Image 1: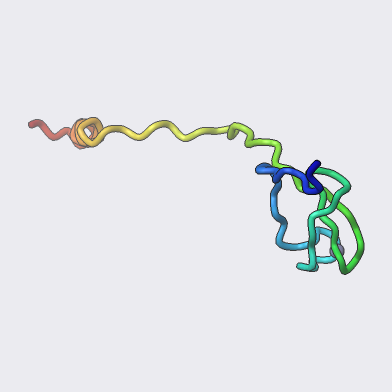
Image 2: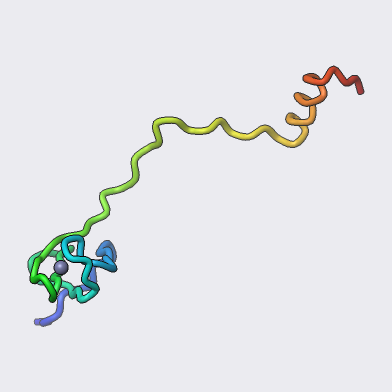
Length: 79
Ligand SMILES: [Zn+2]
């Protein structure tokens, strides 16, 4: 029987306590994502849930040839 837990690759490492801004943080046994602040003694969790899609996504850029063609058409330049 192993006394140590397997490392959790999804554990994020906060740099500061969200309550008192202390940097004196250590992993805590409360949960897989729990941290304990040794200054204010709070135990909190930091967990990444994913990334949401943006509300407005920029249109893909034209190719160089396409951009040149559009520019020439815009300025009425004949090749
Ligand atoms: Zn704190």
